[in-house]
Image 1: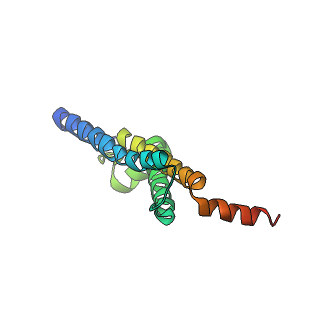
Image 2: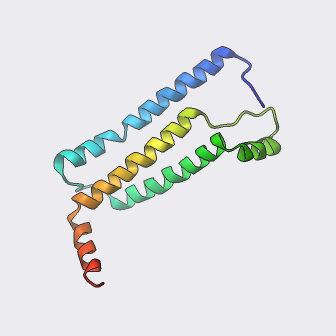
Image 3: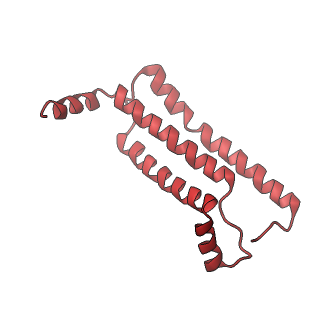
Length: 128
């Protein structure tokens, strides 16, 4: 398995990775807080949130598989060589997990704050 040739580069890689995790993770909170304070999701596009959840879920599956699965890692090394490092770090898994959770929470906010969702739910549930 590949290893770092330089300790300073490894430290820099980890520090920058966690800085990116924090920076991107912070970006989810203003929308969630705004929705909560207003008790409304007016102006928030439902399609955007659903597509974002799809994107972040796919990214999570890739990261978790590459980071935790020894079978996937073996396949990666078989294809690209034993000297290649696995291209997923712990901060990638942490970010994708956080992104899925916050995006799912935003979708939950849409389900409780959006009046049109309640109307559609009432229409479809009354036909049972």
